[in-house]
Image (cartoon, rainbow, N blue to C red; front, side, top):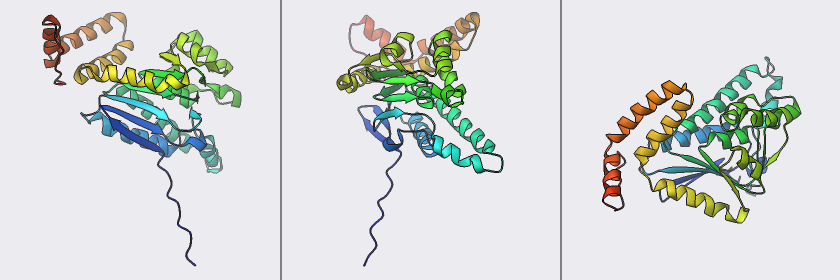
Length: 271
């Protein structure tokens, strides 16, 4: 009697490309898309591929299952409590991996949109905050609840505090309480909340609008946005002025301005 075939494990991350939009779907639904080592590695690897893929103009990060992401995989982390160092080396490696992933999303040349259909907590909320834009279903709730289990959301705090006002960020971090999507939109954590049955259309419309622009111009602008935000006012203006000059000399700026003057649609060369 033959042994039953072993069902192959499903990939933790799915990718679908169409019309210049790459959709990366977190695929650990039963685990509420917890950011395991394997999932973060897959996201980082796909990011590297997309960064040099000229056919991709916009990236959407979505998820399968009931949650967008519940944060780090606490079971995976807890398993290392029995290590000789009580998990110190593993925790250091994991936090470094997560921090590198979030920064890689910010540094990706293409704009990234989070499609948030379900709960996003802790590092899952950090992932939403790390994306350039975020659209959520109005049923969604978000939180940085680490304080409730004795583990302050220190790394999610970095992305959160760069999205919302300090007092709003501190309220989320100190209380650990959930906020709904409408509140998240009010404080700037997401761009907007829409009914769940309109989420795909809203994300698609936003992605298509961005994809219609010059990819070269978008990459210049995205990099400059984050760089100037870390500078003082005078240095920010000096830096942004240099970027404007570089951009003005680009072929797409020349074409775009000519098209505007001539009242026609521009033809982008992405250079």
